[in-house]
Image (tube, rainbow, N blue to C red; front, side, top):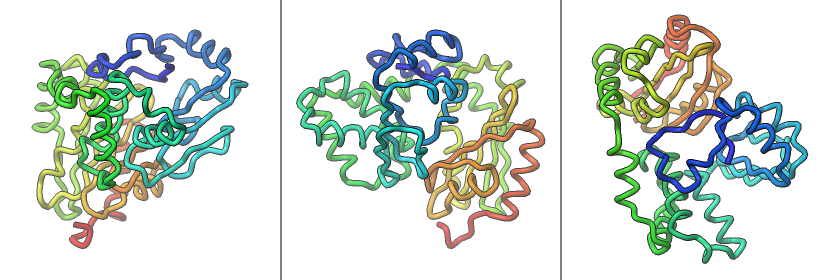
Length: 288
């Protein structure tokens, strides 16, 4: 498994996680793995540019490329594409492919854990884009394969570091601004914030959802300052299309209630741009 960047430590329990090649830290090994592969599966992303520094190596790889994804507008730079935007999670689509090929009987406990974890995280803990009954019948089948759902939930939701909890408290107390006239909230996180609390990848996972607990807030934005750009995470409840917001203003994308984008500007500049954008496009009471 090759991954462009670090994944949250809380996923370290998954089988194969300790063998993953992280391109950010192992660029030569990642490139070599892609060059030597005969088949490459591209999971849960729709464009080669989404894998950042791996884009060039992936594009030049001669392997047969199979994309399995549920985002809109998949790239044509693959040999075989399973693209179903209506699916709530890529791991649900993967399960259905395994089932259709007649290999469901080979799903063991470790595989069931990986598939379930993907379904949980892709739907924000089943809080958005999670109405498909097939999602839950599949989880039932994974339980029969040995999935220990409560144990997985403990790994994902109850293995936080103290610094993570303190960072979340700091951001919600000091960096959260409500704009009730736009039914919108914005959380910002600077490089300084990250240094103060020894930030690790995954420490703000799910934080963008917190403002949506307020009845009048329909749109939540999290601005995460990186070294060269600012990452934008968007969430909504109801019918407000954050994927359209991301596409219109930032050439981003995603789903109805969960989307994202990147802006090559400072956190302060990005915040100004976002504020101008929400004045133009924001939820109303009709979106509840």
